[in-house]
Image (cartoon, rainbow, N blue to C red; front, side, top):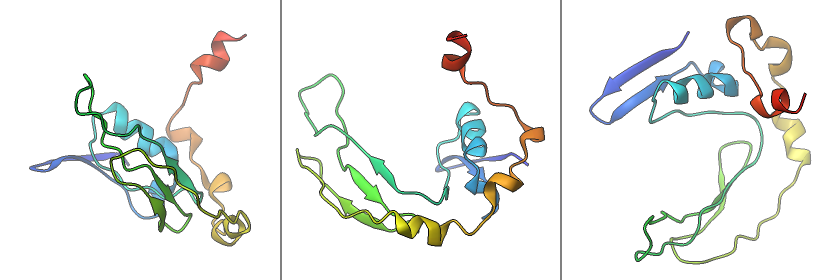
Length: 121
């Protein structure tokens, strides 16, 4: 079920702990204008941002970050130019991926279209 709550802090997509593991739910919430959503896809996530340049037409936030499959912040930067160097142990993914997400995905509830793949045909 897709539930979008409008609150003083913004539009919040709600999902139970298991449902938010499927990225399709996040994509639906984004399309509906959600500002906030927590997700757990049992993988490492690297967010990359340019350093802050207050003189540019767009001022980036900075704070590139590496997050582990358990949601732990492994490394992060501030807003100035920096490089993250961190160890990534891919064997931990197998410890985390004990939930059978691929078998339990409900493709009958939504359909995603890969435009780039369709254009290449």
